[in-house]
Length: 191
Image (tube, rainbow, N blue to C red; front, side, top):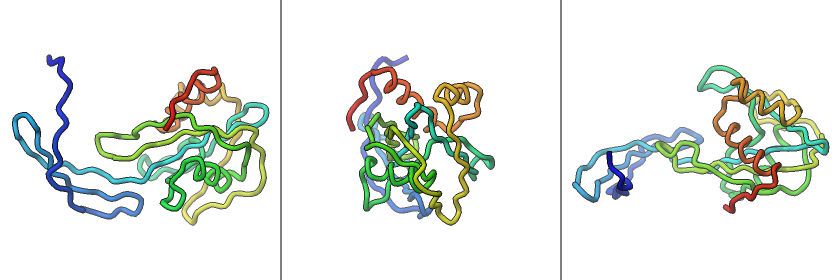
């Protein structure tokens, strides 16, 4: 068992492999700096994502339920999505996604934290923001292939849904972690 940190492999070249609409697959050749072994790895170049923890004035959480093609079933999650190039700030993209997906809006957002969704394959970050004092402003404004059910529940119920595997999306679980820290008054990192 080694107690040394793993080496940072050197990128030799990166070539486009496939354009998949919301991400690009690239073939990358890496070389180990110590023993010079090389191999090809396929990674996904993705834009960053944002998830919004939308809290009503009475501290209930706004969730959305949508069909997810990867698992071929519906998934309870926080509103959010891909951060478009023109609004590369999660503090702008998040509230916009919240209104589009749920019709809710609230106070200016507060940044909670971020994670790498899958660093083995992806280069992006998922950002987590909280928007408090949310209220229903309008109807949903969904993309052509979106169909979302909206539910407002107590925060504790969301944690129960997670522990009973009713919330299974890893980003939603991570978002609930950051919300728990925020509601407990614990510090949150910067970007």
